[in-house]
Length: 444
Image 1 (cartoon, helix red, strand yellow):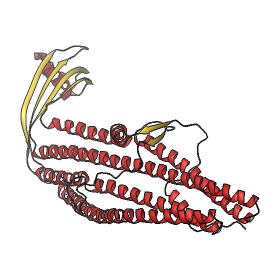
Image 2 (cartoon, one colour):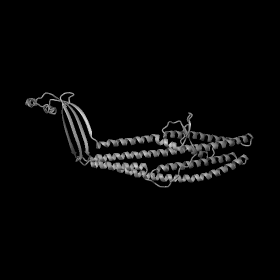
Image 3 (cartoon, one colour):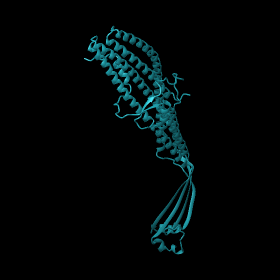
Image 4 (cartoon, one colour):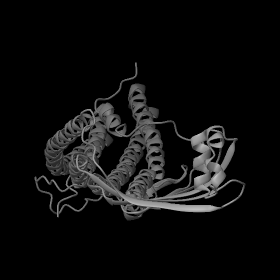
């Protein structure tokens, strides 16, 4: 029965922290990628950023539509009418300025023949004072600011995702390096064990145990190669590029900039600002609804040309004036509309409070994870030194035939496990730091 040594499962659990997928059969090209280049290309070409910018442009276009509050409106129409109604026929003649003395004959007035009227009409309306629309315009302007903050927050999110993806790629290569070193060491042990087995100094079970160790590490290496491709595909997605390019990092896992890492909370984040601006927009919308109770003042003008034939443009006349209108009562529609808007505004305010509290909890959690990872790095560095020394001693004793194969394999497994745990601690610290920056992006 094949024996799996303690510790190998822990190594594989660290290896499989990244998503495992089947390796591609195609030969992928490998490109060295720098973090700054990844962030720059992702923030400029990522589809989520592009979509956020489009939403921002839509909001700006909607604001431009509110220029109608000040701008005149003009319409041109052409109509053809025919009637034998006494009142209409006489009216057509008056509009065409063609009334004669015989048109007042009672018999003709009461039983006229059909009459045609072809009308060319120009209508112009000029807003003068509409307080509700003025506040509506201000509300829409606030919406453009909301989408600007959303675009900013989307860009910050892409930066965080890019940093984390880069760190995942670095961790994958570090894991590959550790497993490759373990494989080379295990193969050396296998060569020595094979020679001693051929001399009859060791049992076949010792040789089989080393072979199991080799196969296990090779399986981990195959998984890591798939993980590198998976993370590379995700990086291509972030940069809005076709998949197929496999990336490598320029250096091993570095510590990111740790300045200003303190347990503080900021309310100046772009997503908070977006919600606060949206609440301000609702306040203006409510005020706009209240202003609809006030009278409205607008000017209008109309110019008409009447003729009895197509395409005639005969008699012309105009009419212009100023209108004051006042919706005194609309069946409580405005009152209920204001009540609904207030509820929606209050709901958004509660959503903002909830988001701030959740972010505060998330920030505290991330800060503790950061501090825990920093402590683990120190601990793991010491553990690696101890494991190296223990493996060196056992390896020497094994070469002298003083310990069995199981002992030296366990020592080698322990050393690999401690190296992977160190890389994992560095990875966790940097991931926490990148997320911490995202959570506190509004700090000055």
